[in-house]
Amino acid sequence: MTVSAIQYQVNDLAAMERFYRDALGCEVTSQNGSVTCAFPQGARLEFHEAPVTQHEAAKDNRYWKIGLTMPDLDRAVAYLDRMGWPVSRPRQFLDIGYMCHLNDPAGLPIELLQQGFEGRAAAGPEGHDIGAQATLAHLTLRAETRAAADAEWCESAGMTLMSVQPVTQYGFSLYFFAKTHDAPPDPDLTTVANREWLWRRPYTLVEVQVYDDGRPITPVDEGMAGLSGIKVTP
Image (tube, rainbow, N blue to C red):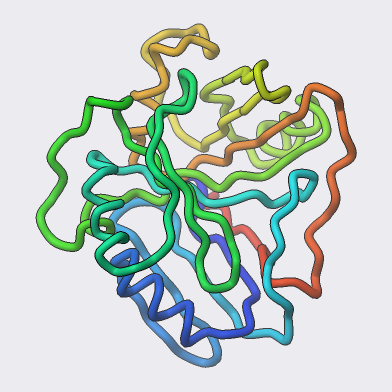
């Protein structure tokens, strides 16, 4: 794996434990004021209790979301609908992927992304409709420039750039980094043909959003529920 754990501070551990166990089907352990949640593949989530406010997402925050990939997104959404948990309607977002979004009890955004594009679902493992088939595939952050993203994740963390996805219609580009020896099928990192391959990786990538206008990115607010640390496997 490239990222082994993503750490958060939240103010209601019991609510997080119920959501990640019941709604998302994680394997959950609780001890000493913390809750750890794990999907079958990818990094684990570590929640620690702190006197913080609800997370408020903003487009200039360094932290954006986590992303779960799975073979059959509609199966996952149907389950969330039965549970009564609010989730957006799945749609094919440009040539990126078939996806939808929801928030956890702390207000932290979660993206659900099908490993195949719209109309290309595959059968997943039996069991929980989300937990049995999900990989914690993406930790999504923001940077002010491509150079800053490369410096942090390639030069400092020793990761490899796996994909470059310009989203010109919305004024940003996405960069995906991982510590892996995997090589995309096509050496052109911008090609759409690599994307379904990328969504099937069985480990967590760091996804970085960079706006075309170079807007300033604000650091994580320590008084608000949100990211507190990242553990990267050597």
